[in-house]
Image (cartoon, rainbow, N blue to C red; front, side, top):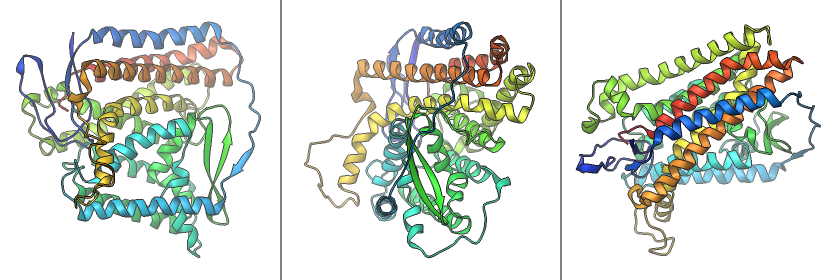
Length: 469
């Protein structure tokens, strides 16, 4: 099987086919370029990955019998407030610098540091760092430092009934802007969007206090989810209406922060959005829309269809997850409450969401990182050379070479499969924690395991199928 390897990588020429097929062009919210033919039996990778997840479930069902031991509470280390304030203010200063470059720098998104930093260094690279080192966003976000300097007390209490709704709405808006908006890389448009988001968040912080950051700010919630499997657990604290950060060390494991229905929906939105990003660029999706993928007319032509597709992908994933819970934990009476079952088992989707994010953006990070360094060395296009000339060269998907592209594909495949295996383990641990009857726990997991196997097939197919860019 000849499969087209490509990821979200830019506004340049995007498709290179064997037999001299013509290319296609689109505006994407990622840096770089890239398309290459892989002469790989990708169907074997897809089937093998799904079988690995299925076998992991069978092994757990047969041999993992004990409930998890209760964990000893780890010591808590508070980050000194002056340190926290300084780091956040430096982050705010860097953001102001990037916004100035976005408004006043060159309009080319391939040399302006704002789009390259936002889409490559932050959304791709920083997420990788958070998965390893924990939720560092709780400490470096560009709001808590300034808020700490103000003699201000929030006049309102964050309504508990809101849950994660503000974060869900804001994350959906971010996903729409990144994946569907016509020019998400345009420096001026992006600067407006980033500045507006900063103002909305700071206004929420002033009105509702630090709880707005943990439940209302989309990326505080996202990075808390992404960092939940690091042994370094950074958590936001509140003292005297001021945000603080505490660090604990311990075994990785998802927290209970997302067990409410709005927390469940937030995780589903993050997973569905990155999955739809891959689907929306596939030849299959273009075929469903009646568009020749080799003559892609641009994002404006599919704006309405992709907006509907993003919303429908969230609904579809939510329906499949609800069905798996209905047929599994609830029908077997492992968990007598649907609401509780939805909240408990959604934690097993967190590794899948993290794995898809890492695998999906890996090629763009590798290709785009040198461009970020070059853009930061001359942020306003004035001819500055803050790094020696020739030290760093702009990345290119074509410059990776076939062997490296194949290696990246295999790493992506491994990330997705490992993420699903960890998810299967989490689901098993959750089920065992609810009953002493091991076989009842296993029976309750079967629909959830089938959902994970199916999602593995879907994710690996997205990596292997031809895409427009």
